[in-house]
Amino acid sequence: MHGNAFLTSSIIINMSKSITFQVQPGGKLQGEARVPGDKSMSHRSIMLGSLAEGVTHVKGFLEAEDALATLQAFRDMGVEIEGPVNGELTIHGVGKHGLKAPKNDLYLGNSGTSMRLLSGLLAGQAFNSVLTGDKSLSGRPMKRVTEPLATMGADIKTTERGTAPLHITGRAGQLTGIDYAMPIASAQVKSCLLLAGMYAQGVTCVTEPAPTRDHTERMLAGFNYPVKQEGNKVSITAEGSLTAADIDVPSDISSAAFFLVGASIAPGSDLLLKHVGINPTRTGIIDILRLMGANIEVLNERTVGGEPVADLHVVYSPLKGIDIPEHLVPLAIDEFPVLFVAAACAEGQTRLTGAEELRVKESDRIQVMADGLQILGVDAQPTEDGMIIQSGPIGGGEVISHGDHRIAMSFSIAGLRADAPITIRDCENVNTSFPEFRDLATRLGLNLVCREEA
Image (cartoon, rainbow, N blue to C red; front, side, top):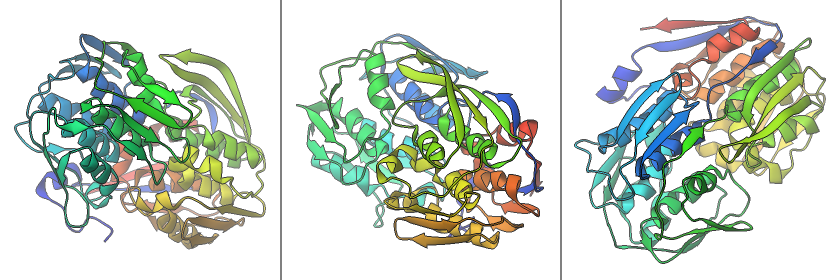
């Protein structure tokens, strides 16, 4: 069931206005910009800063609905957090065992990261909690975290479908470490189990089938919490505490991805994106675009707070279709909606396989992108675990984003190569990850107008 048909009252407050993007065809992207802070790191800075001893200062925090949902959840559990003001926060850590029982349910909006990571963190607390979310989040699978947590001794009840709300009975001192081989590469599952492992007896080990983003491990180390990494295996114990740290969150490569693709497909584009996080577990978008023939330079590489950062210079270059290597899929999982747009502009055929994970994101991103591309006249054939796209002209039309922020932004970028206007419905959730998207995109050269309808 797509759309906003069945909304609880708390969601209607957040989504009373429906937002439509209207994109005029053509244009090019020029200039320089710093896109907002990394969403994954913004979430984790709140979680670990709250559990640390001492005061943590955060710069570059993403002031978007998903990360703010995490911030509010920790305020609801008794953590004093000042800000955000211009992306700066001060977190007065309460220590590993200092969280207090929330008076009400913890409402996490659209944020799957918040819900999955908090389920691990809260399983080992001395109090009970309930995690709820909006309609989209309430449809996303949670058994992938609740089942391994149950083997650690966690007590978490889901709906019959394995979805939120999650009713968590705190089992302080009763969790036991496990050795878990993840069936699907997922940074959220890995992070959830590591956070639970901080409260479990013995060792908690997580083995990945393929590398996924490692922000949790890096940030735990940044807060002086011992984490052991051997190849694709990470382990943690309850023997440790977090020490407050200063964090400078780099720009989110998932947000930069829209502009990397836009400048690659629009003739005459020349764009510099500054201070972008280039964590090697996240740079699949750069690798895939380069394989397609994109002209992307990585400049001024440096390390900030344990995370690699660089400036990305991208100039228009004709793209060619490729078979996307499966080993790059987990390193670009959130960027595929806009990569499908790049594929439509790339000469020949592009084929994606091994990406069934896309079917359980904020929407079924394989089906929703295929439907939208077909409406615009592109030959895009969905498969069980990916898509086959033939290059061809992009026409105009009306597409529905199904409340998925990345779908809405991807079809906006398609306007750069369209030959008629594109209307994108249901764009409210762009605010969950990238509220500045419209202003930044128009400043750099995209002809985008936003309409709010009550």
